[in-house]
Structure formats: structure tokens, C-alpha cells
Length: 444
Image (cartoon, rainbow, N blue to C red):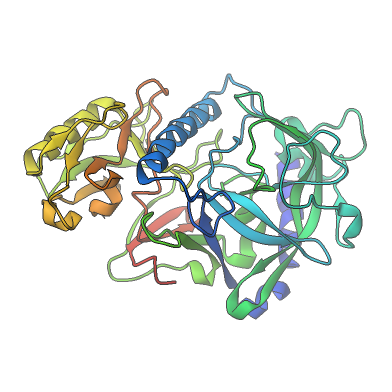
């Protein structure tokens, strides 16, 4: 407890130094988010089709759920905090003095910020240049004696060197190894100005191996851990961030993540529910009580957490998972209700990935198909999912429910990013509240 308190004290001192740097953004700033399938993304594949993208998102979503299962299982390797190549969104940032621009994965399910650095004798191939810490005047390594080192799993590796080292491994055998350091991070923001944030703790990776995407240079963690970007920004951004994700059929597929005063969501249609984080995980849970279709009073009850406590939450909210994942019996009950309401012809997914699909070949717009709203009733907040939040086109003729079963992946439930489209979603980590408000996220 004493070591943890020292870490928080050191972090608060560091955060105090951020305030002058954020003053030009009046305490808040924003950064654009780029979806992996956007033409603006280096991962964009012009030959991909809606069906190939949707099936790829199915496999990424299940892989993501399996990751969360490993992370919540206390008997597994505690280093399994992050995962390779299952990302959804990227952000541009600059690091060092002078600043070097790079592209990194944005992840609300991870804490450590890391980038590949030189020298890197055994690293996965990336297209952009590796960060050279010797070329930056603001780079500093973190010694083992620093309290920040205790925020790493097993207090970092302090057996062989005086500097604080880390090793994060993955379920598929991928890993990253490097040293903890501090550096100035810069973000393109308001009116083409850069917001400079000094003394950010991050992992400078000198060895890596596995199924990482060569088009990305690292990862920015936004979870609740001590090393995540939002935790480090802390009081400087009032412990708040928000994002607004546009529909995946939007041509540019870019969103926006806001920090500080720009992350406040308080419109007349906003609803608020509790953000829940357990003592053993860094990601965020919500408490989902029931699901209803078209205002049906006979809602489908959602199971409580494993020990029956609402305080632990029962569904993860995650921007890095495309599809919403729920218990199989709840999914089947939802499919039954939708089948009785929607008057379109049903068709089967030939690969069996999706439980409910409709033939929309004679429908010009989704709204013309009598697709009902689906309401997720969280504690204190009824979130109404429009058809674009609950269904995705498999192809031009086929529309499928964008929710899948968690059977075979340990019963992990996730409120995915399709369900979050066209909502302003604000995280207040001081009050531990989540605010959701319907919005047009194509207008930023």
C-alpha cells in the first residue's frame, strides 16, 4: 500500500506539470480516430468486401473475448494484458523532442503505452521508422528504484539491470520486451495546434515477436490501469475522456476521442450508468439488467456477475470489439423476439457465424424493413440501439444481427463498438460514471 501511495504521489506531481501544456486547449483536446477499414488507414484493403470485413470482425471479436477471458482468469499468466493484430482503431501521435509522428493502436482494454524503439535486434517488421530514443532530448529511462516501476506486472524486471524493464506476453506466443521510460507525447488537435504532454510513462520496446501488424508502431492503452494514458493525464484532463464512433458504412470511418473539458457529454437525451472496475482487471464493466425489443414489456433478463453482485458488473464495454457478445440463451431469446417482429424473409448464414439474417434485396433502406429498436437496459440508463447499432450488412442482399454468442469463449459478454456507433460516450474516471448520448458522429 505504501509503494502504491508513492506511485500516486509521483504521478500527481507529474500531472501537475502537464497543466501549462494543456492550457492552450483550455483543459481539453481531441484526436482523430481512424478505423482499420477506413481508406485513411494504412491497413485499408481496397479489394475487401462487406462480407469479408464482417467475417473478419467476427473472428476478431471472438479473439478479443478470449483475451478478456484470459485476463479475468486469475490463474493465467498475468502478463497477458494486451493482444496482437485484433485492433479496431488507430490514432496519430508524435513522440519525443523534436516530435516524431507515428501511428498506434487505441485500446480501452489495455493500460501500458508502448512503441518499438531502436536498437531492436529482434522485432516485428513495421513500415514506419522505429523511435530512436537517443535522438530525443526529453527521453529518460525509469530506474528500478522509481515507484512507477511497481505499476508493471511483478514490479517489472529489476534482476538483471538497473533500469525498469517489462515483458508483456500474449496467448498466441507473441510478446514485447523493453524498458520503462518517460517521454513527451504530442497530439494534433485544435486548429492544427499540437498539445504537448511531458513525462508520459511508456514502454520502449527493444524486442518483439508475433502476429503484430506491420502498419502500426505500438499501442496506446486507455484502460483503468496506472500506466494508461488517461490515468497519467489524470487531473490535467479532469480524469475524463469520450469518443464518438461513426457508422462503419461511413466512407471515411473516422471518429474522435476527446480529453478533458471536451469530453463532457450533458445533452437532454444523455443517460448515465455506473462504470465498474474490479480489483484484478483494468478494463471497464457495466451492469446490464435486461434487453427489450420494440418497447416490449416482457424484456429478456440479463444474468448478474458470476457471484450475483451488481457491484462487479456483467458486461465489458469495449471500443476494440466490433460485435456485441452475449450469453447464448439470451441471444436465442432475442432472435426469437426479432423473428416475430421483423417481416422480412429470413436467410441462413452459410458459414453459421450469425444467428439471424434477413433478405433485404427488396428494401431500399433498413428503416423500410420494419427493423425494431433494441433497448439495452443498464442500471439507471436505457440505451436504445437503432438498426445501425444492432445489424450489419453481410452483403447487399443480406442483413445480419451484429450480436453473437459467447459459447466456447468462457461466457464473456461485451458491449461492442457497432452498438456504440453514433453515441457520444463519456468516461468520468473520478466519479466512475459512463454517459451515453445519441449523436451524429459523422459530423465532428
